[in-house]
Image (cartoon, rainbow, N blue to C red; front, side, top):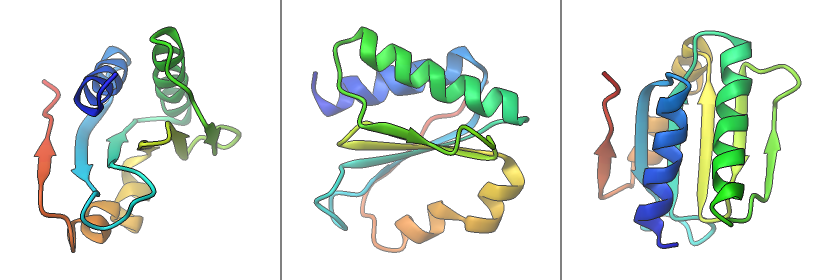
Length: 117
């Protein structure tokens, strides 16, 4: 599965559980550790956890390796590590506080936004 297919699968898994403000950042100019960061918002800890599980399960069903998940105990910020893609699912207040988009966008050349209706 190529990176664009993986991105599409992750975004679809997030959209299935009604994530909001899904953003995909190309991090290849900044690091060789991973190629993309995907950030999404959730309205509650329950939704945050459900979104992470949706991403994990969809990627496993597609035969992709899931390196791990962190933060599901509390659920305010859950990270799903897919190797070449890192997915951050956050409460809006946590997302605003850490402002990962600005952190990564400082040196990112390409940025793709996916709007969820």
